[in-house]
Image 1: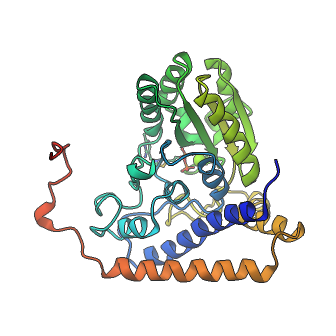
Image 2: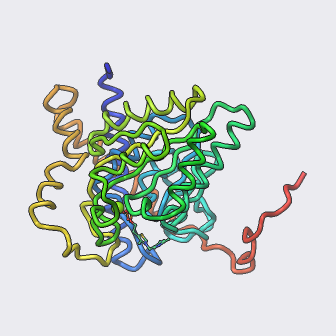
Length: 324
Ligand SMILES: Cc1ncc(C[n+]2csc(CCOP(=O)(O)OP(=O)(O)O)c2C)c(N)n1
Ligand SMILES: [Mg+2]
């Protein structure tokens, strides 16, 4: 597929934004500024950016306890995203969600769901709604390799299959569900092999190659929009940090980690851009500096924003009637 230099730099900028935001979030968490916990997606940026770049704003994604990359790639605004993590009322979920529950339906992201596998039936339901309303939108569920060990994965994917729903089931196979290697959850060599049970296409791809992810997602999206049903995409990737900020990763063999660091998507894509003459090192450095100052400015504003009003603690707990 031919890409312009501008297209390629945009893929890079989006991945770098996620990388730089998450690195900064990690510091804020360790300083005690971010409450709760933090699941970073460092090393998995290409999956979020590749898939979401193949979507329209009106397409809807569901996500997991590790949603930062998905949110930023789907277009949740940086100020509202950062404010959410800081628990501020200007957050995309009014400061009530935090790291594991970010989303903005106006950008096509339902607030993420931290129950493993929880987003899969929701995406299936969203796709059913699209089909019944005859809207040509597509739903995408992002879930981890751990989600295939949940019963809901199988029920929801089968429903999507039998009704030919416009949905993509993207499995981010980062090899581990917390400390459990995926080979202990399945006898299959690859999780895409599950697709045979539902009679739908299933592919395993290099999830650290943003262009491979994008092209695979595009094909699956076209299929879904054309009424031909779901696809399982297993994107092989690796998280280059702990499961959460308290995880020393002792279960990861050292050579496996070293290899994963060699293969991480941001550095890899940067090398491609330099090798093929799409950018000079100075341009990439300037892009990074610009992103870093944008992130700092956004953090400063968010820190100064008010916390939610305690008087409003019970608002948004239940659905409220729409005011006319
Ligand atoms: C139903 C359920 N069981 C257990 C947990 C605790 N938990 C949170 S994340 C996680 C591991 C998930 O692994 P995976 O699906 O591979 O996603 P990853 O963390 O690798 O992105 C577990 C067990 C949970 N949130 N929900
Ligand atoms: Mg995993």
